[in-house]
Structure formats: C-alpha cells, structure tokens
Amino acid sequence: MNARLFAMPGAGPFARSVAANVPLERGELTTRRFPDGETYVRVESDVTRRDCVVVADLARPDEKVVPLLLVAATLRDLGARRVGLVAPYLPYLRQDARFAAGEGITSVYFARWISGAFDWLCTVDPHLHRHPTLAAVYSIPAEVVAAAPRIAAWIRREVAAPLLVGPDEESTQWVAQVAASAGAPFVVAAKRRHGDRDVEIDLPDLAAHRGRTPVLVDDIASTARTMVAVARQLTERGRLPPICIAVHGLFAGAAFDELRAAGVARIASCNTVHHPSNEIDVAPDVAAAVERWCRGGDIVDDVKLEG
Image (cartoon, rainbow, N blue to C red; front, side):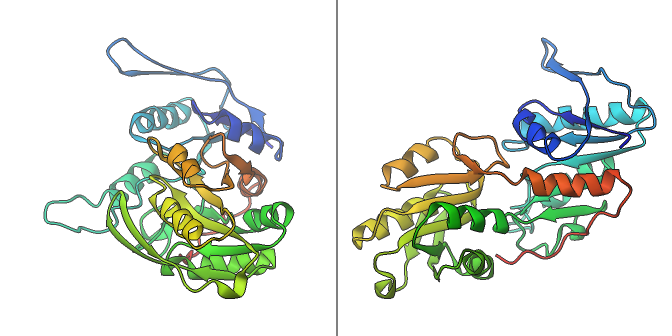
C-alpha cells in the first residue's frame, strides 16, 4: 500500500498496535513548542501522492487539537493524496444541544474543524446521544469500530461466572449485546445525575444472581462516579467485589484511585486512551478499517450506537 502512518505525541502505543496489524510504512513526524507556546511541525518522510493516516490520542484534547490540525495541513501542503484521522477516543460530543441560553454547541464546531482538515475518520464507540450518528455532524466519511466484541471476549476469558451491570437505562441495548456474546446474564441500574460528581444509583434485585461476579461496563470513565457508586452499593449488599470495564478510561484527576478505593476487584479498559488499566486491545479492528481505506475500499459509514 502506498500509505504512511503517523503518530501524534502520546499516540505511539496505539499506532504501534495498528501497525502490527496492517502493512503501513511508519512516517516520521516532529512536533514541539516554541518558547512562546506556538507549535512547530516538521514531517520528515516523503508523502508526495501518498495516503497518510494520522493516529491521535485526543483525551484532554484542548492542547492537542492545534498541533493535529497543523500536521494535517502540513501533510496536504507537502503533497499527500488523502489524509485520514484515527482517533480511538473522539472528544467534544457531550455538548450536543444548547442546554442554556448562550451556550455553544461545541460538538458541531469541533466536527467542522476535523471535517475541514481530514478526508475520513475512524473512531471507537463515540459517546453519541442526541446526534444519531457521526454523519449528523461530520461531513467526511466516518467509521465506528465497536468495542463490544473485544470486551465480551475478554470477559469470557477472564471472568468465570460474570453478571454484567449496565450503569443506566441508556446502556441497556449495548450491555445486552456484550452479555449475549459473553454468554452471561445482565442487569441495568437506574442513574440520576445531579452534577459532574454527584450521581445516585439504584440497582435492581440481584437475588437470582448470587455467586456471580458483577462486571460493570461503561463507555466512558471520566470522574468514575457512576462506577464508584455501583461498587459501593454492591459491597453494601454483600456481593462479590465487582470488576469495572471502560471503553474509554479517561480517569480525570484522582478518579482511578477513588475507584480502586471503592473495593473493586479489577479495573480494565480498552486501549483507546493510553492508561495502565489498558487490557483490551481494539487496534486490530481499527487496523482493518484503515487497511480497507488505504487499499481503496469504502469506509463503512457509521451506524447508530445504542446506549
């Protein structure tokens, strides 16, 4: 394939996992800060008439977005044929409506920036709510890789008698899919959020599942307040210490330590955000999408993800 793979700072581990599954030449890229805080970019590999794939870790995105856009512009300026973005975690999806007068709908604005800089996008389980698909806000082809099959395989391998626990009603269909693939029962909690760090959880009756290990599965662990609340309730009910799984383990501030202190048995995350809890590798599925695009195939347009 006449394509090069470039890793933005912090994205090296995921880029290496992708490269291990698809025959792309690695491109060399230098970015650094000038003393006044501006970004310096240098592409050190020939990209003339080549497809280029940029892998970016966009957790805590604000300091990363300007360098990313400058790299995309530089690749185009140096003659790249097409430039694609692999962002395993896609930020700026929470503000998908104007909840109060004067607020910005930042999911739309961010999508415009990315759509103007890249030819296609590949991500893993974006946190869609009011936007039915990425196509509702992104004007470039966008492929969504589902983490559920890899999570289910991990559960089958690592947990002898699991009981999957969904954090809220919106997660029902997604958790049901993981549970069916893992061959395990599931329950769904009711969640009431009163603020970024104030969450109430009501668990259903678990009497029919005595002796099973609770496995809490959520798409994003940022403050981890939902997981902490569920873990504490399970402990109070005398259940086995739960296992917590997050697709995107952001773990803002002391969230990871607080979750461990809540009495969980194990914390595992997909490798969409580099973190010590990464145990579930979704890079092979992302690599398949990248290879399809680089070989001239069509991007599989994103589908609505329930939950």
